[in-house]
Image (tube, rainbow, N blue to C red; front, side, top):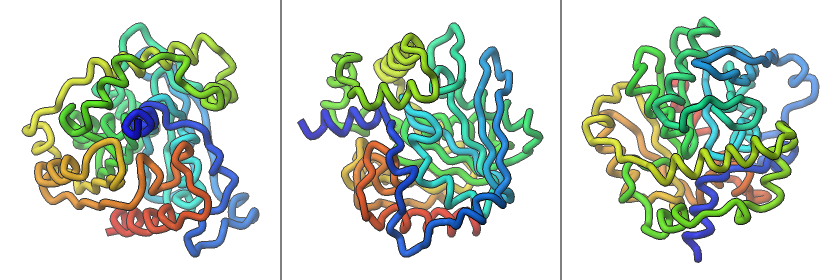
Length: 294
């Protein structure tokens, strides 16, 4: 039953309750004056047959963030955005069929997601960016580094796996028998807040389930081809095993590996896994900023 709970988190990284909460990390919340001084831009870009919604927060070295499956930019990263945008330019997106971004008549794939992100950077006139992805978004981020290495300065992979064997068998059994009714109402409500279209919500669910049911392993050679300086982060109670994270670390030359106490996304304040008064998100932000600043 433990794995059923954890595996559900991996697909639906939703609900930003933490967006208005404080990260108890020894850092003060940003003042309203600081928030007003930050630059903000949002819009839609025509990307490979879809209208992709994006936001830009702050200024500095670009960092593009790719949310998890079933989520949106805010439900995955709402806790991080106010802090990271203090010192860099954040580009956040809703991926195909998620949130405010439209769908196309093709299944979701990590490869297509990578191509969409690369095209967005091109349209924004950003030659090279740091790329961060969580869960399914981390798998898309990994594909950006493989397919579009010229676009990646540094790579951050949060709570991902590259082979089916990297997760317990119960995960795949759950995905095989998953049903829309198992998605809690609060997740449905949060999706509908940014896209008030029940059919789009159902379509997103079906797209994500199909992608995971048809998940194909990456080859070891694919990971070995990644040359961007990389940080791999895994919770010690994550969907994938710690041993699997070590395998990825050994394949990606020169990568750094961080195992943090916590479950799938809990260590950085992802909405589903948010724990009030946890100091883990603050510790994660410090490590991330140190890695990106090197």
